[in-house]
Image (cartoon, rainbow, N blue to C red; front, side, top):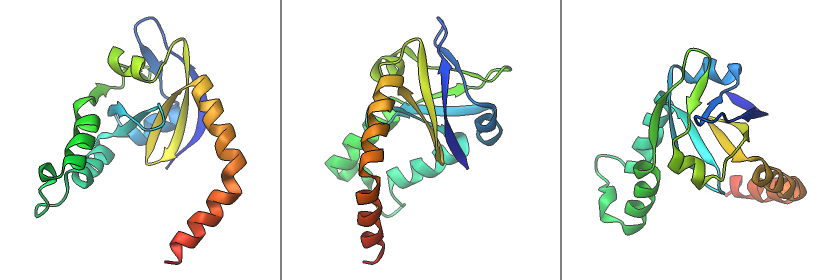
Length: 148
């Protein structure tokens, strides 16, 4: 499981270290894709395969027939990049993804169970503060959804 929050620098060549605990789980290559709420998602190849199958639908569902599915799949697959984790644990963040997330200098790396999220530090602080203020309400809402 991927958990925890870390701050890492991004060097002049767009390389950033992944926490050692994350590298053990993720393997030698990862997929980076635009995430939601202005972050990037990083998946192990195994987890990306699961996500891809779920986004594409089953063999009987033709995901390309739905405009919403087409649009979201273009967003996720079209901007995804498979990158190697180098010998000292760094990944290369492609320019177009770095710009999309507003990354420069350093970033916050967050483990979210099955994926890693990479955030602009200020965006993460804002999101985290908002989520902390709403945690009780969100927990209550989620507990009610589980009863349905």
